[in-house]
Structure formats: structure tokens, C-alpha cells
Amino acid sequence: MIESTHRAWRAPFACALPAGLFLVCASPALAQSTAASGSAPTLQGALGDPDGLTIKGTVRARYEAIDNQFRPGLDRNSDALLLQTDLQIEYDTGPVRVGTEITDSRAYGGGTGSSLSTTEVNALAVTQAYLAFDLGSALGAGSTTTFEAGRFTMDLGSRRLSARNSYRNTINAFTGFRADWKGAKGQKFTAFYTMPVVRLPDDQDGILDNDVHADSQSFDLTFWGAFASTPIAGGAATLETYFYGLDENDTPDTATTNRHLRTPGARLHRAAKAGTIDFDIEGAYQFGNVRASKSASAARLDVSAYFAHGELGYTFASGWAPRVAFELDVASGNKGGGSYNRFDTLYGARRFEFGPTSLYGALGRNNIRSIGLLASAKPSKRLALTGMYRAAWADSVDDSFASTKVSDTSGDVGRFAAHQIEARASYWLVPKVLQVEAGGAVLIDGDFLKHASGATGNGDTRYGYASATVHF
Image (cartoon, rainbow, N blue to C red; front, side, top):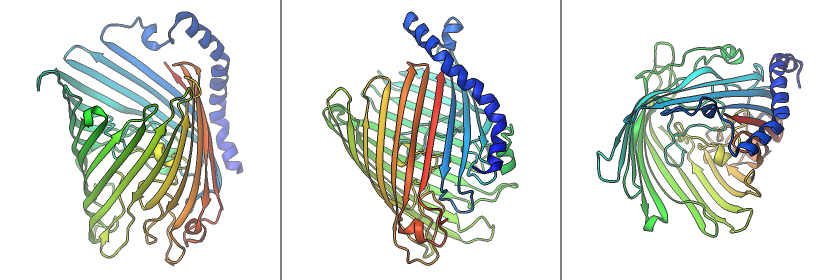
């Protein structure tokens, strides 16, 4: 580890070490208290469980390290301590709910040569602040309708294009409105018009110093659309369809590529269940236009991009509930020729398919062709194990591969990019209160990452992490 990283660690360790010792020492007492009371201690209970008020939160500490960085222009090795504290409060008056969420996301260590960005740091952020109106069965017997306005998070469908982040240290948020309807037979429909929240500060000094700065939103960046799902085949499967729009324009302070994207898509899936075959098939096409660069004089390019995901799995009916699945993913890369072909994953999550993000995050839903084999098991109610192997190719050799930022100007290095091997384990030290997790990934370079003109030459990338999360 470089000396500057050692110096940067002194302050966070001074805070983190007592907290870690507290968690370790408190675990037996928490476990005994939980066993004696039959339920987990919560802030909600400590307040006397007041009528209409729901309050909950989490505190998570995660240490990460990456060796042989794959991103060009960064330090070969780096590490960081990521802290996330989240508090959610909602008051339900009956037909109206008022809610807020404060998320404090910070990172210590890393330094100027790391990949730390607004995906890791957003200190003291207002993630949600909303009014929700529960309209009951106003739109049909047995149905429920909700209208929400303000700032909120959105999980839509598979979460591949719109998600509330879980592994990532910061969380996507949107300001606007959404309407949700659920039919008596399980049908769902969501319509929304929002301004995505821009996390601030976004300069390197502000990020490394964990500066507190109010986030922003404006009509220069809007995300809107509709999502629908319905059970089919007697409830054995679910069909989803959606249409999302993203409109972006320059602001006085920020130049952009002026994305104007339209993304229609569909998904057919069957949830995993012991003793049965499950599947997940999704595809989306993207059209619209973007500028070739952030320059105001850059040419506008028509967009023609796509992604597709296929998954076939089986869960064995045994005590460990082991599941194996085969996955296939394709997302287009830019091929030039006067159009723009790199798929934009919008506000989707990728950790559940492409491995850890944060300081790692090599693979993603752009310029990739990949096959994978997933295996998972739950030996007990407390312990969950997951392992995955992926082989990945560049969809286009004229574009940077996936999320690595590695590109090639020679055009003759071949498409095969890497093997990725990932594993993780999570365990509830105190059920519903304290969960620990450890995992890692290895990216074994293929021809593209070895020989591309933009490759780092660092060799195979190794990444590991360990975390502890307290729920209260």
C-alpha cells in the first residue's frame, strides 16, 4: 500500500476501530437480548411503536481493496473504508403518508489515484422526501392506487434499468411524481415523470473530503415512462412491458452529450422455487439521439442500441436450497459509422448479475457479450453463499469494453476480454440486527484487456471486501 494511503487511513480508523469493537463486543449481548425477548431490538420499539409512525435505519461499514487496477490512469492498488448510515421515517395519517429518508455515504482512504466518485460519496443527502396519497380501490374493486410526489427511489421490474441501489454506497433518487396501481389479479402499472437527483459535490476534492453539499435536480435532466406487469399461465410466470424516456440538456455549469433516449422493452420471467425450473428473459431497444461529445458544436448521432438477458435456473428441493443458473447477456457497443450504438443502462443496478461494483465494477450492461454460471445456497436461515463464473467478450472492438474504460485503437486484439470469478458469503450474527458479509472477485485478462492500446498492463485484477451492517 502506498504511503499516502496509509496517511489517509489514520483518521477513519480512529473512528472505525471503536465502532468495530463495539459491534464485536455487543454481538453476544444483542443475541441474548433478542433470544430473551423473542424479537429484535429496534428504534421503532424503543419509541413505543407509536401509531402511524414507522422509523427504521441501517449503519454499514465496508472495507474494500483492489489490486492491479484495470481502469487506465489510476493507481495500480487502492483501498477504502466506505460508511453508509441510513434513516427512514414515515407517518401514515390514513389516506396520506409523509416520508423522509436521510442517507450519509462517505469514503475514507482511496486518494486521488482511486476510482472514488459520487457512486461512493454523498454526505448527508436527502434521499427521499415525499407525500403519498393512498386512494384505495378508486380505480376498481379489489385494486389499490397510490399517487406519490416529491423525492423518492424507484425499483422497477428486474431493476436492470431503474433501481434503488443496495451494494453501491450511494442511492439513486428522483424528484417528481409517480402513480402506482395494483389490480385484484396481481396486475401492476406504474407511470412516472421525474428529475433524477444529481449527487453533489462531484469534483474530486469535494468527494475525497466528504464535503456536505445539497444535491440538485432540474428540468435539464428528466427521466419518465411507464411500466406494466401481469401474471400469465395461471400465475406461473409474469410478463412485463415498459417504455422509458431520458432527456438531457447542457446547463450553464455542466456540458453533457445531450442524451435524448427512448427505451422500450419487455421481460418474461418465472421466480425461483424449490423443485422447479425458473427463467428470466428480457430485452430492450434504445433509440433517439446524442451528441458525439460534450462539445456544443459536436455532431448529433442517431442512437440504435440494445441489450438482452437470458437466464435458466433450477432450485433443488433440499435443506440448503441450492440453485444453479446459466446466464447469457448481450449489450451493444458503439460501432461508429455515423450512429451511436452503446447501450445506456439508465439508472439500473448491475451487482446482482455482473459482480461487485464500487472500487471494482468491471462488467456492466454495455459493449459486452457474456455467458455465466451461477451457484447459490442457503445452508441455514442465517447463512447465504453465492459463487459465479463469467466469460466476457467485447460486442464491438471499436468501443471501450463494458465498464473498464479500456479501448483499443489498433482494432486487431480480438474480442475476448476476460474471465471473472466471484464469490460471497453473508451471515446474520444477530438475526435481523447484525449481518456480516465478505466476498471478492478476480478478473483474469483475455486478449482485449491484455493487448488493447488502452490497457493498463497491470495483469489480472483482484478485489475483496468485508462489511458489517446493523439494522435498527
